[in-house]
Image (cartoon, rainbow, N blue to C red; front, side):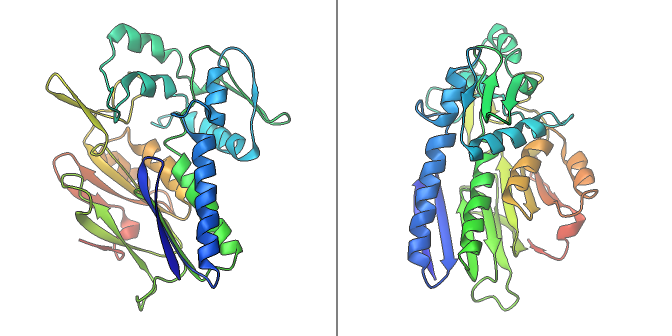
Length: 308
């Protein structure tokens, strides 16, 4: 068994694998993650994703199979009614720049202008030609809400195909487990859930998971203060401002990491009671909510798998 720690995608990534050729597999996984970052980045001017954004309102752009696949999934999920997920949110993200040194508070006029550009229905996909076209100049796709989950699923699939006995991936708050955890009689991995009110590494609970993903999204890591108000990075596509509700963080436990990403963003526009009610109706998708007044609750499916 072997492990590797990387600094990529603006976060700390941990990879662990149990396999006779673990070192080679970890090197290959690192290469793949670097390649993914290069192609899917919404911040690098020379990424494949930015080529699409640079041609907005001008011409369709041919992309590789994986980027096309994720944009297609992202568009479908962005058109789900009542969801906070929107991959066309790029212009808003770039204008606010929350989490970056040059963050700013846009004027109401500017926000109004940008709302016309963040409609996911204006993303045109041509399956036969594998092209993506943004109908209006100024549009921009941002896959930040989905990419890490997609990457994690791809890397774990490679590990499984190679015959790994067990594996663990942590893409900065996006955890995916496979096989039995070492030194655990029951075989389950213990995943710490970050306390949103304390520095990183302080956990409020532990979830026991096996062959599952644990994804957390919260308003506590990327923030921007302006005129005494704090603004986070999860936006409401209807208003152009950060979502306002009682959620400090939302964790989703699911089989696939991409599903965890979809559900954390999909549900983040709702309040804690609505989130739990919805999770309890969906088999295979469980979650933990922590509210801004420091209350915690979790869905029925986690009852025997959570330690406070």
